[in-house]
Picture 1: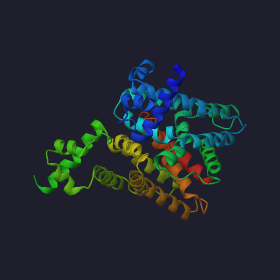
Picture 2: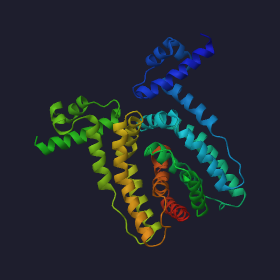
Picture 3: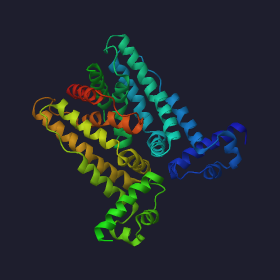
Picture 4: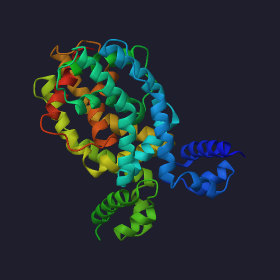
Length: 187
Length: 187
């Protein structure tokens, strides 16, 4: 195999292993076996299981979330929710992020790395939406940004990953964007 | 040991094992060893590791969440958030629920049981708050209850369990209640 093909085979094997056994039970041996490569090929690219998974999660978080620019807070939130709703149905979000959260509860390194990934992905885009809305005068100056980010990111995550409800019905994302925009304006 | 003492020793051992190794790695053997009882004592009370953990989570979810009745939507949400914020800092929420979510992503039985527990606990109280607000005329009749529950439960969960931010600063819960009430009124 070419170097790049090996890297791709390892990435694909990680997704399959995560889906099958979860982060806690996953091993570098299992990944290497599934990818059809030696353990050394994995360790040459990533220092540990944690680094391997975080690298893959970061790459997906960043590539999946463009910053919308529709000219209104509600419109921007609507677009963000459409992208996020799709992303949360990807195995990375619905299986791997809960796995990493479970690990984060008892491992400070994982907690820090996961927090950084979430902040750079979802919260990074939401911050840009908030800044643009403040500049247009839609939001009060000196808004509590942390609270605003929780209001923006929490509800869809709760529905998709925590409660694991069905796919949002027609109209749901639009109503969510309207309610969230009104909530933010009341801050 | 008396029968009740054995049950209590097992419950305490489950919390310690969960905190130490997590749900995926936890075994009935490990629980029994930590509790100082035989495996049979555990299996006589609970059919499996899953039943044991869900039983404990359900008991805590129900006992931890009274239904507030302050006379206003914002006031009720404020009280709910104070109780929930404390509950989410308990090891059950911050460690065990993420563990169970990770399992739920690949086990339909766990997903269903966890969803039932969440609906009966957090969402049960939130539903009562919504019904009282609708009766007072604070909310539109025929509101999308699922969306409303996501708006109420998502933000604090995102902050406490997903991003694992610091304890909410003074004023945070009050502002969250105000913003959420305004968001719900816009539905």
